[in-house]
Length: 83
Image (cartoon, rainbow, N blue to C red; front, side):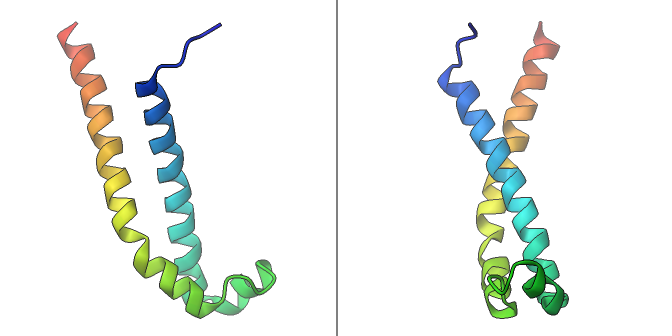
């Protein structure tokens, strides 16, 4: 059985959170421009107002997660170059 270290678990969590934030960012952006379609698809849960609020507030976590993702990728590549 493979042992998962804290570092690997942290990387996986960051990658998944980044994926979720990208999808949410796209969905809420679409919810602002095509709000009737998104409201119908989400059964009225994601209104234009809520989409706008989420879209405006998610960019800070998105930038942080993207920075961490890039950092861990560069560290991994640097390790491979040094070997």
